[in-house]
Length: 303
Image (cartoon, rainbow, N blue to C red; front, side, top):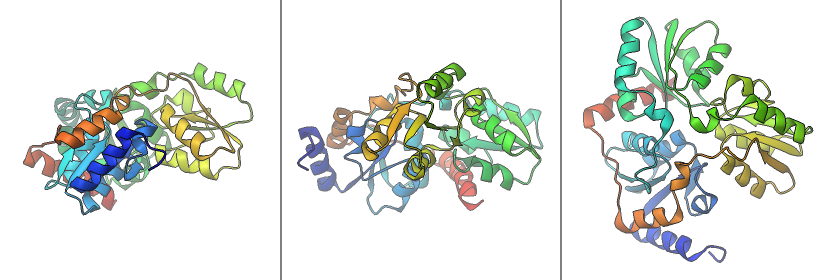
């Protein structure tokens, strides 16, 4: 603990006193990641919360991540440090949107990205993550798939799974969406020897310039394993910072300094400390809605 600041030390003391589990997403500040028990993607956070012996879970991420943890751990107390840390992509699809698309396409299955509310998951047939999206799409026994909410991930999957017809919804992650083809070309021009790894939430014209496309965890794994001495990272810039610290023998670049998720940055050390001290901002869900959402998540795991 000698390299930790006073707030980090106090957080670790409280975590031990309260027998709490702290789970952090890769996009929250590194100083928050440093006091977490695990740093992982949204679905891994939910499954680790479910498997853990602790009954007090702190999800250092945005609201839908806390909801996913609560869905899979209904009897545990799940907290989020920043109550106003939402996900604009998740807010871009409503239950009404899904029901309207189902009415227009009654023979289609609804495939819901995990970056969505519990209410939307509850009216979907199956969930997916960015790493499982291709597998989930191929497992669906219908020829038509309504994919919500991310149009960029949907377009990426549709290209890889041409045997299915995809009905797209016009949602997106603003952080990934704002990165343009000009941004990726400028980064490649500045670092011509670098390998390029991007997230499938990016625009298709960005993805086409990548050497590797994958989820956040898959991008991290690629960076660790590639022989390339330089890597351009096409996802939230906290990943570039994390990788540069972990891989000092390599040169890690973010596509652009604008690659920032403002909601994830609301999860500060001060917010985490207050959350633990006061056990505030608990996630609560309607039981019937949570049960229906759990079925969609369970189908994803089983496929």
